[in-house]
Length: 539
Image 1 (cartoon, rainbow, N blue to C red):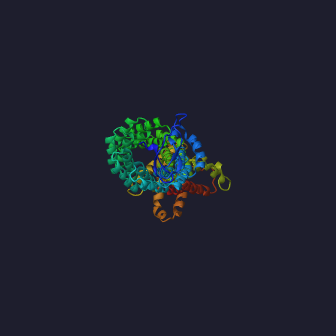
Image 2: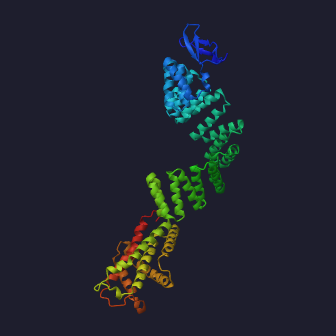
Image 3: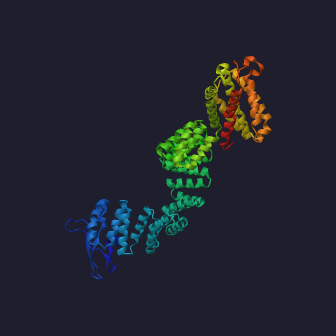
């Protein structure tokens, strides 16, 4: 006997064979079939819902809503309205109809089943579990109910309960591939990747062409560090589904874990060809390029990821780091300012990386040096009067060179403070900073044999002066050093006894301006550099 020809009396629940549901005039199945219960003589109408299978969900609702007004207590009509609303993803309305069906009949397991599923779509997992538990109570061994209940537990974060219920379902049908797959997924999500591998391998034996399971098996292998097996599984999945962008992406990750960077890059490229807007694939491609020092290509990959997801914080961060590695600090600072608005912690990490880069420090110090050099004309103009200093009485060009050398050497001597006794790392950083400073300074500092000879000579002389007052300076007493510095600078200005090298070419009434300039430009070089270096973490 076909189940569709049987219904239950709405009054006494007696099972009744449905009389012919064919319309004698049209020869077509009837939607409304009058039925009389042989036991209690109740007369009611049976609804032949199979007639509506050719209608769209919207059309079905238009048919059912007028009927429910005539028979508001019919649970089957409410149930079918709920099913139809679910097909239209109108889950709130579906839940309302399912609950009305339960108001009139609490013994229909299908109502609780689909009520639980609708709650699940709305992420109301506790309500979903409650409804599905009631369905299971009515039909304890129904496979669909058990699987839906297990998934609800899994989605709610109750993974252990979900696993127990999946195992119950397998007792009913040990070969149910869907349940095995869900059990493997639950193990993976729970972090029990060894058991996930065992379950997925069972499925692969039964269904060797199941791409999803090969992919999930690869993921489980990756999580336990079996990257070669993971790669094999991902490749199997790709052979079955060549357009599986996620499988290519995860294959790239597995290659990266065994330092196969070229293969990793090719895998990400395949993922992007299949799915051009795959932001994570662009991002991981950028990381792969950066690891092997191909920063320009990495920068382009990070930019693509950000174009797809403008607030992709890790992409902004790693783009900033790549800019640092390419010595593009202006662009790195641009990423820092973007991150400040979307992730303050990453912004702080990025600015710390920028600050601790020897190249950046060298650039910053070169800017300080340039500003100091550009200030010399104004500094001289302040003292330009007959009582203090007449600029006509000095060789401005040679005085400027002495002040440039003093500032520049002051910076280099301050950098010596980086190196602690026996620290190769500090010496290495110092050299990198000095090289960067020299590189950037070469754009505006005179580069001639005469200046270079003077710079080397003054460097030795100022270093000896600093060393001779080391003990006093260590105790925070700079007064005697400054006096010695002023005297030494005055000697240099007088040419050290060589009239050809003398900066003073007229009649001086006071050496105070030159001594003041000496302290000012030593401070611009040495003191300002020390202050700056103290803000840099690795120093």
